[in-house]
Amino acid sequence: TQLLEQSPQFLSIQEGENLTVYCNSSSVFSSLQWYRQEPGEGPVLLVTVVTGGEVKKLKRLTFQFGDARKDSSLHITAAQPGDTGLYLCAGETGANNLFFGTGTRLTVIP
Amino acid sequence: DAGVIQSPRHEVTEMGQEVTLRCKPISGHNSLFWYRQTMMRGLELLIYFNNNVPIDDSGMPEDRFSAKMPNASFSTLKIQPSEPRDSAVYFCASSLIDEQYFGPGTRLTVT
Image 1: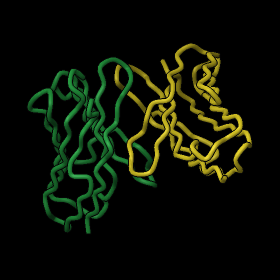
Image 2 (image 1 turned 120 degrees about the vertical axis):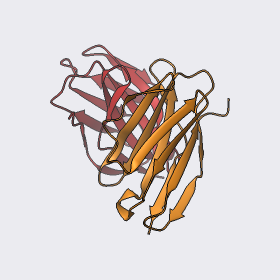
Image 3 (image 1 turned 45 degrees about the vertical axis):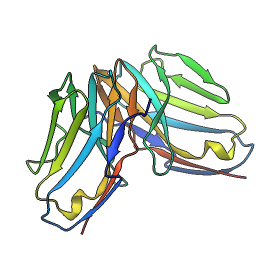
Image 4 (image 1 turned 90 degrees about the vertical axis):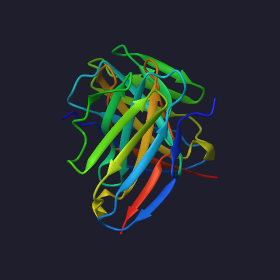
């Protein structure tokens, strides 16, 4: 069973601060996806990283895939209240085989 | 596009009753997934279909759970008999290539 550990589990910060969320595993993944889930809704895909060492930017969000394709990080610059939500990483081992991480619940306080 | 549609959005039932959750995937998508989300175990894949055929049901907890996809636009997840430990949010997702689009979920409470 592939296990994806995310840290921290909970994070509460002030608007304007920076933060980094980590996703770690002992397994190698063909790709890794990051989702954000808001209360009462399903997860929404933010980004997919495929190549070891790959860095992708989505406005104030920066995603990095580890060189060995076992871990990933999400960095948010100048967090906004709209960034509040549950952030999930998901590793793909094969076609349609996604394993979701334990999640990081982020609260950005205005 | 309406997105993935799930019904009901909320279901409260008594232990031992049969529960049926419904999903309409996005038109044109060829893969459909059922997930369960709880605080303790996070988001878990129960089963997925490709072109209406079940491909991997290794995540289905036990025989009380069954899923069907009679056509490309409809799928059901049935729990019979339901137990309190089945209480969770159940998500359906569909995809065409890589990105999975999730429905809003069904919050199931079994008392």
